[in-house]
Image 1 (cartoon, rainbow, N blue to C red):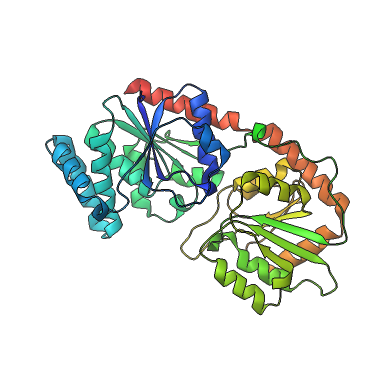
Image 2 (cartoon, helix red, strand yellow):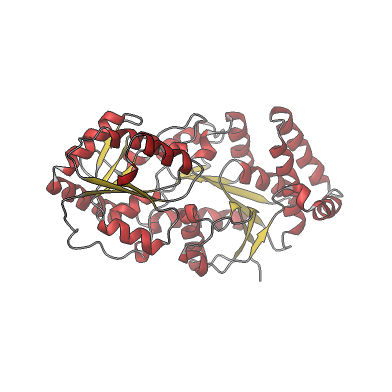
Length: 406
């Protein structure tokens, strides 16, 4: 039986968004009953084990309106008889005037289907991501005459215009976001001043084994990274840094994850004559990721700001590395320093500084005791300040308050 809450996601399930699945599972454990409405069908060839534990029913909106025209027309016919629909349409026309894109048209069509097909019991909508999912959620909530809230993360904050963020914050009941920098930015756009909460994703440590007592030591220095092969992850910078390492330094790099830049990065590694020291493993199950973390010497994530403004928030994978006491090398960007203090919990360099990245790899390789000390500190910080319960408690409280007002 559906509950009073519906959750709107861009795509579900997704391997790269286990932080969302972790939250949904925790909300179910706290007694929330909801259904999931996804704007896109899944495209990964496997799922994370946590997705199998989530009992919420899944629904998929038309990914493209042309794919299901009769469904869209039936929805429009059903909701267009309401005055609320035309008020929502005026809002949408105002948005369309400032953003003349097919995506903006698709958002309203998806919203009409969502509003028409939501169970009668639904009293509140909760969207993950402030860009497209929040737009669909906002229009649908207006059509149904119910409240809505959002969780914002990284790209969705920094790649949409301020007018859109400001109007969404004004229209919603609450918003949460996972970094101090993101929270500060959104609070500056909050005309009421009390809608935005900082909620770190945290990590559900019950899903991870205790860190190894002894990390394998060998002559070769093994580097690992886990992340999508997209611009904001900075893997091109990492290849340049690896090309700067001394010829007599024995290293090997393993990458786990898929992404649109895979072929280009492989070609670049060949041009730099690094391909015999690099292994691109593609997407892997959680057990494989943990095993790789337990056998590596250093975790590297050279995050940067992409040309379109996209950037990481606080990548969960850094906390996952810390859970296995794998030393961390990353960049001083966004919310990464909110978890990793340079020289205490890991090493941070300036984004895009390939020389500094190469120097840091060499310095860390030469200092196993220092690496171990920082890994121990990161593990303590993870277990004392970045568990999942604190963040989930805030989301739970805000959802229950919103539902009580519905």
